[in-house]
Length: 421
Image 1: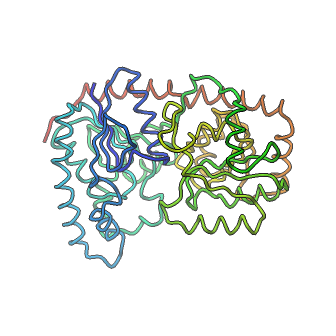
Image 2 (image 1 turned 30 degrees about the horizontal axis):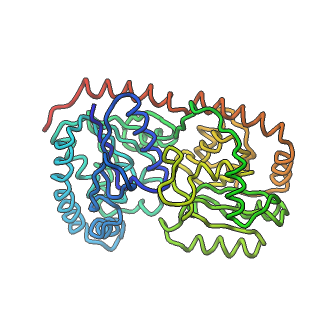
Image 3 (image 1 turned 135 degrees about the horizontal axis):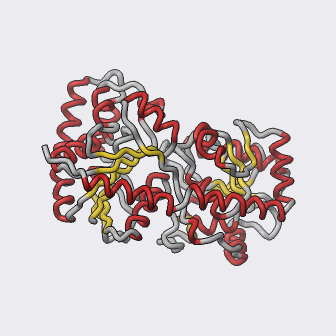
């Protein structure tokens, strides 16, 4: 089949982009052809069409979206502008569908988080007008973000985030979100976690990569390399990683942040740098040196995230909230010791699987410090834990698990294709 993946952004190191790329890989392995459509797309993608007006930072869309969540806005004016911008996008999307002969649409988060209201409206209209079957892959819903709880056009949220149509299959990435979608909207969704390609087998140590990266960070052989493989936004709880490194009392240690700041401003990064200085922790924000893995070959920066995981002594994942936990799944694959905060989805969906991590509940305690030190000092135990975690990842979070589900959904959706309205 020809399958189209649509999003506001398919670029960089955010979780939506990562998971969309994994779905793309699995679909292609199944024999499908995949085409991409988004407002931002990673370079060198010949199967993609770039439409800047679909991005959440596109000026007109950003203005009307901001206005929709401003209590002082005129609701009628907001509705009219959303409709106008949506109507401009409809023929663009339909042209792409026709020219690329798309038979199934996968909408990545554009029907879940209301950062681009006109795009969500346009996509629903396209599905209704064409009868095209669709999968809504929902990573985080609007009610999970405080800034979206007050809206002057609530009917837009109720009608498009996500739309309730017979030809759309809904997918939530955790059980809590699926339960809340059912409670709020009466919409059922399948639960599909973040996945990784565990069929590659456990990665082997790579001393050359480790030496090179440590050298670039100003490190010798001494000192822990602690990797925080997330974007710099407040919900990642990175201040807890700084506190841990400070309390480990390793004056040669480095805390490396691999992914960018800026999605929610730079104030949090400035705060972290100040905190690290006060705590006498060497913090290296090096997002410009890391690209997402593209078959292990980064396009421009010096490294892929693969290198950071290979070189790490410890992974910190102290998130306060996550839709699932992409970097946590990656850490399982790479067999690294992990410190994880017990955020709600972790407690609900990941912890019950039996993974072995150093867990915290919102704070670094003396017990936390002792557990980390003991694990880092016992390589045999760390190896046993790595093998245990990898096997659980292979059973529950692998590409094969997702492949089976996609095959089932695609068969059902295309067999019962709705008629255009």
